[in-house]
Length: 468
View 1: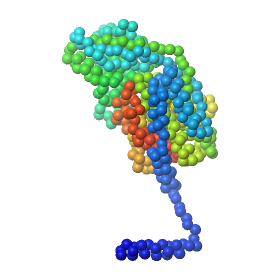
View 2: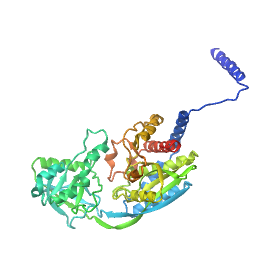
View 3: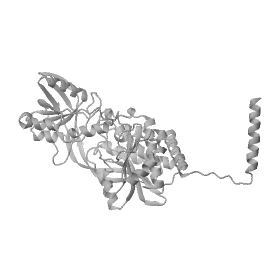
């Protein structure tokens, strides 16, 4: 009975309302803020329900698993991503030529720790750009340092003829693992050259990782005129701990290493570029992307296959939602970020030569993990505008718009006044996989990857709508 009374009341009320407004047109006013919320919601829903980034990442990792610049795998990656974007019906897809360095590690490295004459296997991998050892290997006594000050204090007399072991663990007190990495990575980048000046015959560097495992992490050393000419390798964190333990006990520790690295002549390669042309200001560009090259140990799923497919997804989502951008939106798969930066340099030169005005540049190169925010480098007014959009992202767990942004491939655009952005995923697990053989497709979560792609798409949409 109560239900029947309720239904009757609703019907009567409905008749009254309809009668009261029967001669008046219905008007619905949607504020700009509400309009933006609706648009951002539609963007995230499209990417989370229909997104192709995860499938595209699987294809890239399967067809081009090892794609260090100059390799056949790198060329395959160019072909794969060009095909992906060409199939989307974009306004333009093209290849931008750049000459890249070509280094190969050769046959798998071999390492062994010799403690008081007893040899045990140790996990190493050559650092990017290292020279080879003699064909029959190299054996020398190990001396450990935790920083450059200790190296200086020891001096040439104590280092001459030895293998320097840089043992500088990540600072676990830091909330961001990128901060810990930034503090430690100098020992990989410059350590071999500096140790060589003191007479070291080789260098071992504790892997740049926040975890303890048996997977060594490669990475580039300086490759300019000061590049080290001694064999240099990363040592897994588990083996680094064992070596430290033995040296601390007073044992005599030697190390045997065999590596077959080689440099070749520079090779022609390409940035892969796709775009949707702007309907009002086609000459003004919002560029976004990731780097296509990856270290030869793995498929580079997090570093940086994820960033590449997220950028492609931005274009796909705009097409799927029939969003007509006012400015040209452009995805770039940069080549050679890992060991040279030639792709970023080529794109910046192309932009300068053609007087391209970039409204913004966005880079995704921190893994396919859950997005937490965007770093921003720009004027105070530009930062304030973007930070005013932050509430639109909160429901998707994207909340931090406070740090500086950018990336190796877009930093050259800073000189022209382009605001720079970096997608900032959760950093806690990134350095478990970074530059290792286990940076594989199965380590990427589809939901997390697509949340990052949705965030990038929404940011591009808002920048296109409001400018900076």
